[in-house]
Image (cartoon, rainbow over all chains, first blue to last red):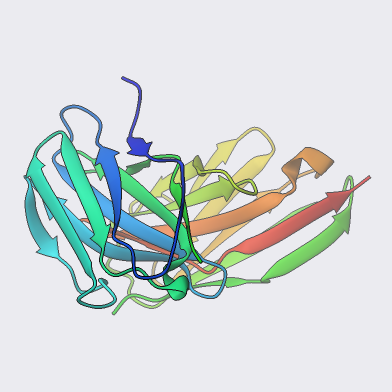
Length: 111
Length: 110
């Protein structure tokens, strides 16, 4: 397996634009996690899914953020509208009951 | 709510020193604790995973211990090398969620 695959690896966008980050979990994993990493706050859990259903979205910062998992092999994290303070590295991870395995992350810069 | 703290936040040492990185957590009801390494601009590399029933794990020059009752873990790095320079993160698994510490940024100079 190629591991957790995230795209794009880098994204630069202007403030106010919509941004969509994508994640393909490891085949067979039933939990998927979105994390955000910043210098100030470290790694924060935004939301996680189990069997494609959102279980805990308490970490989602505000209504501008939304995440979906339409099927077991794909998830998106959308920010609309984006703001400079959303600049961070966003990690996706997946697991099958144990510790998650992480993708390489998407570095988002909002200017 | 689980909170994970790491001390020190940053560490700079000469090559060859033995190091101890500390991690503490507030809720002892964990399934496991994991230590990760992160190089600048890169993803996370898992170093060691300690199950809640275990006391320690070793891999090469790395040794991690876990004292669940006191909410503490330490990562011991023997004979440090410049290639060990990175950020080290501990994380605890609560039910399905992996909660990360604040990280220790390590620099080992020749």
